[in-house]
Image (cartoon, one colour):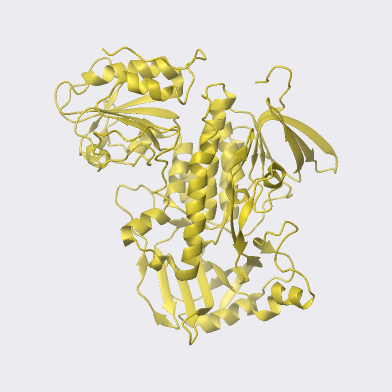
Length: 569
């Protein structure tokens, strides 16, 4: 795995073992890539910080092979109950189309980290605790990093790539010289993990606000259900006695910012106590209630910032190291997990020598626009609420679920096919799930995601529209195997009445017509599904030369050469 003249201790070094870093390391190890993950903390923090799990994140965990454990640990998020000055507002129900396989949920961050850490352990890897990245230098062949070890010593590590998942005060971001433009909210908040004895509907969050005479919100309580009877993660404005801003202003200092000037995250100092939480509940709870069983509480600040680029050379940033914003809609951690997943499959191909030039550069091209959109949207929602979104409720729900994230126009995604039915997904879009797929051996209908699970690139072929439907797909299969070998799997879906040719792999039948309807197909069509579940190409009619041309922008052949087109047959 080493370049000539350089010994690599590992292929990829990941700095930071939160959910984002663990996702990157877990996906790399799942693909057989050497990876070390270090974290300066001695142990996992027992705090329910980021708690919302979006449906798209469950889809990622499904593709990775760890969704079952996550579903067992999480609790459903059914919607939100809203109150203004004590008056109940229209309830928000979190409703998604029936073909979406997962719903909204809540899970304490420490449990998310536990699940990902256990997943990483399946591949013989562990977090190197009390180990801090101090500095690094990079050259044309790799990155040399200096680590401070648990005993206070230093270790030099050589890696092909470095990924900074080290949070809002990222060492990696600072050392790369990335800008981190934005600002901070003046308000201070407190978080608390507590139990209450109200009888509000189970599975619903609670948002209760007070508006003053001028109509502005001057008091707020937001409660997210957690596993356990009556247990919630609550956020509230900080009372004056706990305000660091007041304390530091009185002392003539700047409030809430670390040495880098970024005021974001948990603060040290006096933590809120149960009476502080109870005082807010007495003012804003929709029902009289008593708080108890406090597990943790803290004061925190919120900023909104984003880097000017997501990497430089062989070094990349992801998650809070790249973008920070209000926690509205539980977008932050979930966006960071998608960052890590997008980057990890590309790094894996690069380490294997299978990536074409430009593949790693597409990480910034694809993920930075997503980060910019999330930062802007969460800032708007923090000020005016999700209800102020101008789109219809169904679109708002899909966007909040992160199911509308896409990469149309990406340099590694085909432009739309002019003949494509607009009702189906276009290149760059998320590949939707569907049901009703029956196979030659399996006696029960499968979901499409069952066929995609734990696979990398998948050539998804649809045949229908007459007796020649399957015959048109044979050359695609041969081209895929010639261009990418075992780096690409082939999945064939046929309409119920289309004969299966002998040249095709085992096929699945679209018995209920769900695939044809959701993918907008009427005749033979080829889809290339990327490892992250987005479409890279859609060809209608299928064309081996177009497929080979596309793969030439992403993959090297097993022989180490760009793919060459297969002659049509």
